[in-house]
Each structure stands twice: as C-alpha cells, then as structure tokens.
Length: 295
Image (cartoon, rainbow, N blue to C red; front, side, top):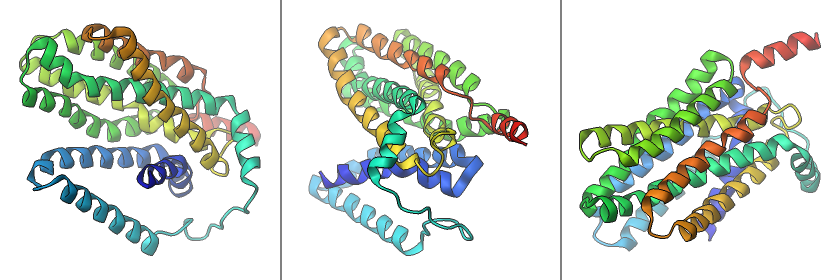
C-alpha cells in the first residue's frame, strides 16, 4: 500500500517537478524518466532468477528505493538556483482550477487509453503466444519482454523529435495511428525473426507518445507549472483507473479469444488520437508565436 502511494505521489508531481527544472526540455526529461523505468524492468527481468528467494529479491528492491530516496533528500533542491518557491495556496483551490481545465481531461484520457491498452497488450501477450500460437512459456515471456527494448529507445526519440519539429500534435497523431496498426499486424505475423523485429518496433512506436503527452501538462496556458501537480494527480488517477478497468472489461467481453482481445487493445490505443487532436498545440513554435502576439 505504501509503495503504491509513493509511486502515485511521484507520478502526480512528475510533470510539475520536471517542468520547474527543465522548462522547454520537459518532454526530453520525461523521456529520460520513462527510459530509466524501461531499463529497470529489463534489469529486474534479467536478474530476478538469480535471487534465492522472493523475499530477498523484494528486500534488495526496497533497499534500492530507500537509497534513491535518501540521495534525493540529500542532493536535490526544490527549485533551480535563483528561483523562489511559489506561495502556498489551498489544495482545494489548486484542484478546482485543474478540474475545470478540459485540456487536463483530454491529456488524462489520452494517457489512460495508451497506458491501459499497452499494459493489457503486454500482459496477455505471453499467454496468447503460448496458448494460441504454441510458443514455449520461456520464449513467450522473452518475446513480450523484448517490447521493452523498443520502448527504451522511444523514450529518447519521441521527445527529441518534437523538440526538433517544434510541434507536438502532428507527430503524436501520426505515430499513434502507426503504432495501433503495428500492434494489430504484430499478432498476425509468422513466428520467427520477423516477429521479434516487429515486437521491438511495436514497443518503440507505442512508447513514443507517453513522455510527450505527460510533459504537455505544465505547458497548458491555464495550468502552467503552478497547477501541474494538481493536474498530474487527475491525470494519474484517470490513468490508473483506465489501466485497471479497461483490461478487465475487454477480457470479460473477449474471453479466450486472444486475437479479438489484442485487436481491441490496439483499437483502444488508436482512440487516444481523439483527445490528442482536441488538445492545443504546446510545442516550442506555438509558444514563440504566442509570445510574439502578446508583444
């Protein structure tokens, strides 16, 4: 329970913290954060079998978390040098402002759909490969895990591309459509090298949008860094609810039809295009244009 609360608080304030420190490069910083998560998953999967008992493996993870928290407390500052902390205001006031922003809800919905669909897809893929395609259990697990390799590189590539382009929305819409198509096609490919390669592409394409979408929160005109924490709480809550309820509902409807299940997850990922398209452009070029108009 405490671990869950800690992670939830971290995710809720992530956009606010990174937005405060990295400003225009928030999406790139968010990508590094996501990439670190991907790397940790790979390391955990690679070394988990080396621990003699489950208790020891969890103890090592707990110690690593404690050390990381201690390093944060000792060496991390609240704000960059020369900047002051914002004046404290009532939590309810912050939350009301975030709740009234429809753009926060658009980001929350896009984040929830992408998180729920990709989480469910990767979770059921090993069982689907084993039961429907006849793949051995260990191989099926490795095939699902290799998706993370593509995700790792996408965490850097996505933010870097939008910083270069100066616009977020066209890139997000295009890559989301392509990613949904890759998710569907991936399941129907013959087993072998091509399947492994496209699994990496699958992970790459589906992970491009995550850091960019979350980094857009402090760039919303009505939110900014000041209310990004409250907005992040809403986005995180919606994401967690979607990632729990959507896979359960989809599995209930599709049952043991693995093909239908994976296709539905792909369509849900595609549906995230709708809230993304409704968001305002928050890229660097849009900000420059707004600053020129205000002069």
